[in-house]
Image (cartoon, rainbow, N blue to C red):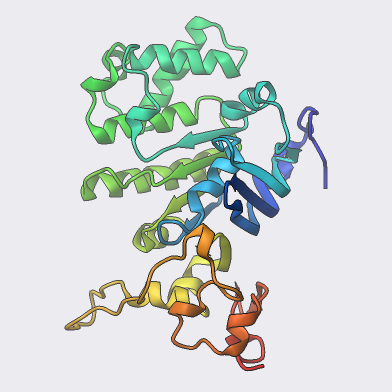
Length: 338
């Protein structure tokens, strides 16, 4: 694979996957020792594809996205593996090099749009500055592109809106502005971390439809980080289910949702109410996600798993192909007994 660390991206970078993560490990040194937040995670996103990354709080979803963007807070560090965007290796770049890559090759959409918008500047000023920073357009051309982006993300009267400040926009409209900012330099990859959580349900549906359309129109690869399987079902092409810092099941969204193999994925799906069947009580997954400093040996899910056996308590199963999906469970790999 092309190793673009400290080098320019290849001329034909659009022929490479938007994102390729291989054996990623993220660590947080502490007084109690080194805590491993992400453990040997691999995933790939092609252009024009949405990969949903799902799991409970603490599973490692957001940390994975921050590692890709190079935004891990100290003392967090990428301790192993590689991150490649459009054929260019981006882990290990200096902060100055990462600043050039972010925006131009990678965009970000976060849960609270106010954290991405400066309240002291108009929306137009922020869009124009971002466009000029990452492209060769002059001020007038950047302003025209800013207007086009606002129209594309569904903001009415863009000429007037360009002059307004973030507090003059509703939550849904602010999120549309953030999406416009993420698209400003036509990046190959967008990390969308819980982009609909803070919005009303009706606005959530609009933002989901917008992300899907922009992905298809721009050919951008999107990593959609969420805890909501409903959002994944509506939006993603493929899904990666994370638990305790690992990907424990992945594959096409239809297969993972309707024919899950891993007991954790099955538990997530059984906890979702059905429109076609009335039940008195939803199933739940007993227990909670283990803390980084108290992960059990073997498979991290075994204390909560109804099918756990001796092998599960001693060995972490590898992620292997099972039908159309990949699953890390001993049930599909020769049984749980040793």
